[in-house]
Image (cartoon, rainbow, N blue to C red; front, top):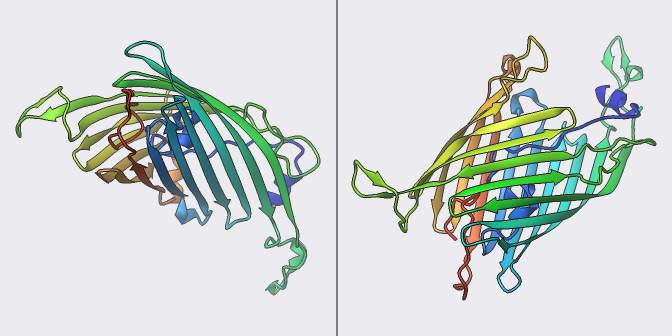
Length: 334
């Protein structure tokens, strides 16, 4: 019944899907990351949100990107499928990306990127019921609604990343053309989403069991503080935390929320705490994160949110010219 009400509203607003492991879903976050590994890279990302609510918020993402050193260019493709409410609402988003690598000076590089996407959104309300389907004996039939709606549109996004050997800062703007996503006759413009992200990688070398020093090493020992701020329409959110790498082990902890900005006097803007564990071996990295709900929604016993990321980087032959490595978001050496 809620969906029936929503589809009869002339204007609706919505927000994009957000991933807790934003640094691992690089191409979804910012098209400027296309080719940032300087090798062939494939990524699978899966999110299951609030499974105890039986809401069935499930999102899957596949991406592939590569780099052409001759033209200083990165190319990528990202496909995202999202299901809500046992597939009552689902969407498919496929985007092509291009990024160009600019060497501003000996220490700073800049990567602008652009994305062109095809989006298909489907609303299937055939399984819903109306009052006529019920009698004093309960549900007697579900034949009143046998229909579905579909909307397709083209979406344009862009972004940029400036980085050095240890530091990076990026920004992105999705839905620049603000496409109409209404299922009915009318206009429901998708609000543009603006995001800023950055971090600083602190690398170490293990010298003995008690001391660490700032030196390069074949194996990675590092700590990387990160942030990710985004706003869309009247909503905004901040992720703040860090992850650490010790040889093959990956751990991290983040906080999501803006406690200094309350949308209501009785509502403190806390969303979740995010814990990460992972494993990496050579070019393969597998990470899992869990969102511990800390908002008032905790009373509903949501069972949090789960995310799984699998990233594989296929390393090509050595480049003839020196290429500066982007310190994030790859856990792998490249």
